Amino acid sequence: MASHARGSGARYRIVCYERSASGERVVMDELGEGFIAAVGTISAGRLRGELLSAGSEGLQAHLALRIASEEQLARFIAGR
Image (cartoon, rainbow, N blue to C red):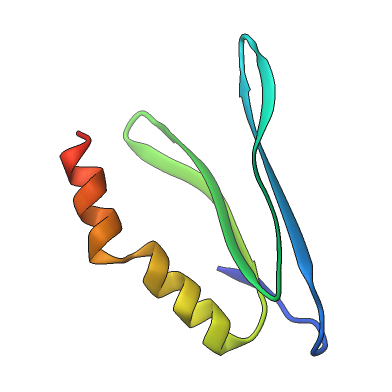
């Protein structure tokens, strides 16, 4: 995972768009002191992706735990 360290007080704006045949729409537009972002595609059973993060290690650790939470995993499995 690539990490981008900045001085204290840095803020990051993350804007994520969903693109489809019918157009483009913003699905996230948030400002914060850190982020973990990933984008990927699975093709022929292989993941190709990019990952970038920034912010304090503590904040990134909390974000990673939230991403990997049991609740989110349960929702993912239930939706299959």
